[in-house]
Image 1 (cartoon, rainbow, N blue to C red):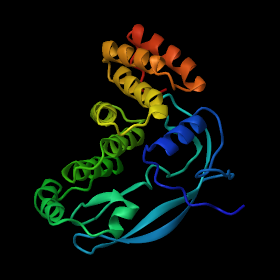
Image 2: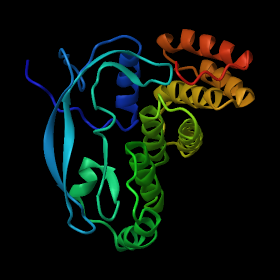
Image 3: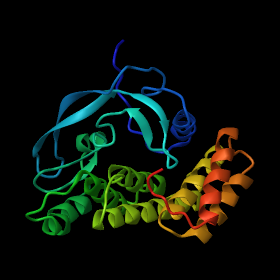
Length: 252
């Protein structure tokens, strides 16, 4: 079977609807094909700020077997989430692979070489923190809220097995993901057939951080969305019941 490059999964309407349908049981690679395991290739990126060269891994194919209740994929996904976002080893510019092929605005370059480089001087960000840095840059550049929320969501996925203080960092990312997905809906960035799944995802982020009252309200809002897909309804019922019991299980 020919391996297929997996596109960057920003939560646009098409990918959200297809991706979340796959999340509840279909086996997928990219948009359509399956494979027996995760495969990756090596690619060279050039930092658009200081021209540092980076050798990175790029996911080519993978097999998914359903998902956790926050839509994180299960299966032979290997380094899929780790491969999505990269950071320059010197200035710490971070973003998706395609961001390294585009020129940066003067304002961004000033921020990277000033505030960002100073903040991370002598330290190497974790892969989850690379997502955080990319989200901060996107905020500076006034990108869409859904893209920013997605970056925080990916960061939380990368910390799924975290304990201690790092588990609190994961919850911080989940709070930020919920915040930006709500802003995306308020700004009209989420089309009608994706509002139910996104509202559910907000509720799930809130339940996981212990904000059960807000979670219940958003589960109810997701259930009330007229275009919410049938596959989502039992998930809303089950996760709402957890919130009603004060269950903040962050590992399911």
